[in-house]
Image (cartoon, rainbow, N blue to C red; front, side, top):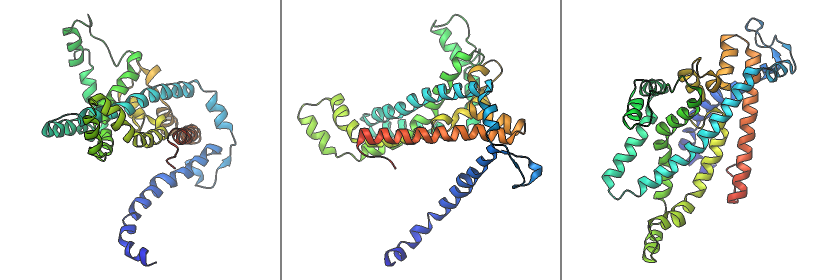
Length: 303
């Protein structure tokens, strides 16, 4: 009790965060019960009849649902691979910059896009990727293409555009975690390795990477939990809503857009809740599987 009294002010600092997560993360979970009810706005909170698994049967028979799941899985796994490795590579490159001023400038410039609203980001890249935009001008100037490419009108480009935008916007910000882990490595290890004749690449592979392996493991587990939403920034819906159109629909329609369309546009709340519940169960399953993989590789788990 004496220790708790001394830490009372510190403990109270956690309370606002606990209230925030309770309101915005735990209370909404109760809404998933609507997937098993015939929910209607006019029936009040407790006046709904039981629907059982009817909405799930309809969901699994829907072509739109399977299309949205295919696109969500495909785009998310691509993003997961590139957005997980690009911050690590960027952190290693920044760490090897010998000039302190240039290192700070590179680090600051790389994470500035993180602070831009996704609406601004999407607008910028719509301009860049236009048939008369700077990307097409560069490709034609280098004679890589003979005519402009309609990036946002051809479905085959949509997933890769999403991956590139996420890497451009978030790699610098996520690299901060790795840079912090690298800063905690004992400099004597590098000096001893250099004395023994280890070059720059050997120091990276035998000192830096093993020292930050557990940090990468924690981020791997946490990213798996949000994988189906497009990673830590949950960008799948943003890209589908802001960059998707009737031309790239076959590649841009994801499960989050499906839930919004059915729940808000069609007012089918129970049907949308069923789709969201499937997404939540899959996300929890991926999180638990990643945690087991972490325990097997590193000998310890995140939770």
